[in-house]
Length: 450
Image (cartoon, one colour):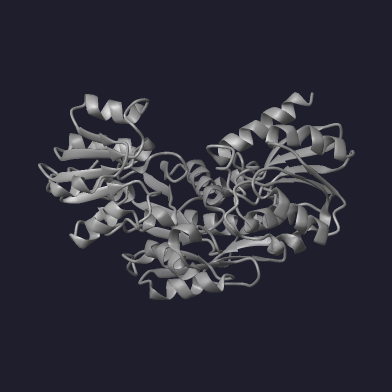
């Protein structure tokens, strides 16, 4: 961990807690900053806030009062989920107070170089693949970021012998200033989080911030098949390393005649790869590119790709029962993810879908429903999904209260040889705290069938 002396006696406001905010506040306190913590949840029952209060920090809970800005504030570290139109942040910007996310602090701390991964879909799978491949290549990677390991905590342990493999959201990237990864990856750009960013253009600009401090000594691994990605990377000073599932890109990763190549070097035959789904081939090509740029070995890459069958909640095979195969794709919180999941199966599918209604319709899902023989809906979007099922000619549509009840209903609608797939195409927050909770309930319900 690098020694950071410039935070001593600085007045820092940490806005929003949970794991990342708590870890950020603790670290800044250790670095000698005068930390004020603000969280919208009441102090009662707020274990994070109570812990920080016990360490001697000023803690304000129950809202985001503008009076916090009456005192001297040198910098704000905010929870990525708090939008910039928050009144307190608007006023802070007017006062010229820098506003960062904890990724910026992690970069300042880390002695290790960064591989940073972002995109609308596939981030976690790609991040996990890179970490596993580098591990198998004896490269001492550390995994961090939006994948669940708080970056500032991991960065404190990072040395020059490590590599920080970091999944980043658009929310996190909006709060960086000096962050400069050695290798950046932009997988794809699709409509997502427009309730936060406002427009697709603003969302894309947030993602493109991953490139903004890179130079020709750094690398930008980008999806050559995605026009939006290729437009966004034009402003980058990095050395471009493309990947493509459709054409030979000699200066990057591609497939030809059933073999995966990186810069003309054969790496692995496609039929040896066990991770399901055509969309995962893009993630694999991106991961291979990053690993090869860090001198990972072909043996390490092959060892992972011949054994790695997926990340939990991301087209995760749960088990087979009475000839039915159950898959947990609870991470599919948008239409594109569910389209990708459905394209992975040629067999009849019983689809479990529904969740938070963000105001969108599901017409874009229509072409992907050709192999769906029955639909089980739940959550706020149930009626909208029922309408699209009717357009698709799906005659068997059942509505249930929740995911737990959906599983036995799906089983009754199925027969031997079918796939039962949880791929909601919606966020979970109308009924569940996280998509992980939703997926865990699905897995438990599958086990209960026995």
